[in-house]
Length: 342
Image 1 (cartoon, rainbow, N blue to C red):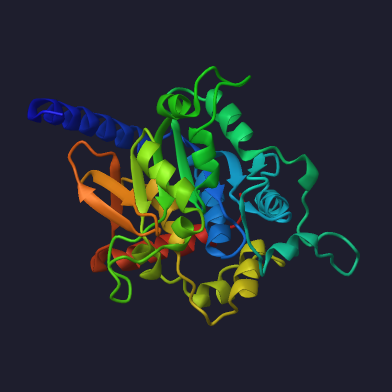
Image 2: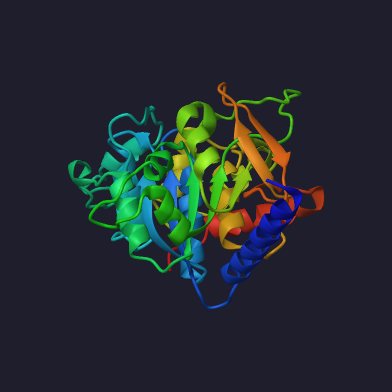
């Protein structure tokens, strides 16, 4: 690519990104949202899902679908239970299926627990045997949306999105997965990688990446829209206060977010807010919660480590958190996570 072509490409991409951010921030137009999560091992996925419901209640987004990127029989029913708690039990849910990352969970068993009267502590009606494949749900959901309208948030393994990228035409759309994404999606916000040294290690291998490195590399190399990475260093710098778990969820007993947090790490443990930051950056990009790196390119090595190279024509950026932003961001995460159902 010669210098003139590179400059033109950079200017064109900058215009697209600016237009997308303006439309994201436009008042009165909820953002069509797809949430892809490995809800299983850590409780920040659960808090992030609660945040999305709070933002939808505020008219800022509309959750179109949730796809689960971990292979666990209780994961999709648990998502349905959380959605039902927030009075949105009809939101479609898809699962990764065979070949997905397999993990154990300290809290997903909540979905099968009964109260003293034998009723489900967390009502839900999703039959795990009837959960559609994540790629099929993603393709049908995207095909039904206006062009360049959807924001996707990935806070787990890359399996579902890599499979979507590599999917072919089907009954939902004549487009390949990559072409469908290019037409329908305006932003991918994801919690993945590390862009600052962690404990002195400049090549930190972040968990969401290393559990399916092959898929992570496919997404980093092939994804056709702007991408914003929230690196490991962001969530670790914003520990969710245990005092909020003890105080701010008492309006409902039982409460799935509080229960998941307690089962994962009982207070007074302050759990990092990794996944919550990707939700905040995607739905409220104009509030000054974070700074952004220059445009560039994220490369993922075979060992799962991430590097970023500045390139004006690149589609990738990563979040930067300044010390002055930290208290305000943490307050937003707490207020949104603990907001009661509408």
